[in-house]
View 1 (cartoon, rainbow, N blue to C red):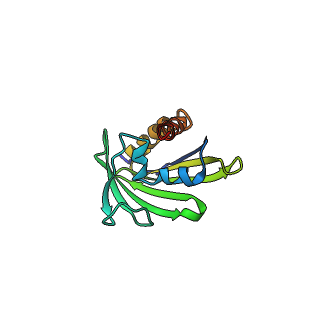
View 2: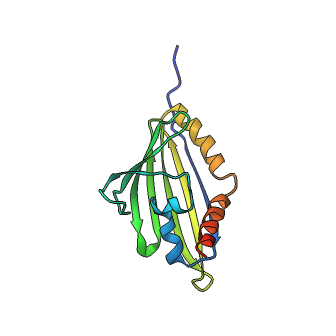
View 3: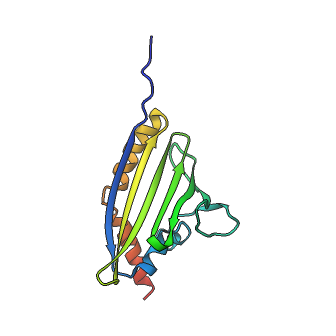
Length: 157
């Protein structure tokens, strides 16, 4: 009786949205610690360094849900001049990258944010979780992110 060997699956999706605010205001909101301002359920727990700064190597954990107890996050790219940040996230079943790039548009009065999630399954369960999570993440093409950021910025007056 032979079993089929495990085959890792990769799934990736990208969406963009426009925030009616300048890039100097918008890009920092994708910093893991600044995200708390527009996503109230977001609660990263810092591991490295000792203070909440974003740089390559910044590492933190986030409580999981369902079949995954926690997610380990690390900043693997951060280029403030290019308005690009990339996170690597891992669990026992899967890992993924989240890449956020921002560009200034409309005479520097608006910001286009482009977000790509790329998942790789490390186990059959990971492949299954990835298919489910990417579908859920992009069910509204990240317009829920746009609405949350818009609401936060509006609350500032």
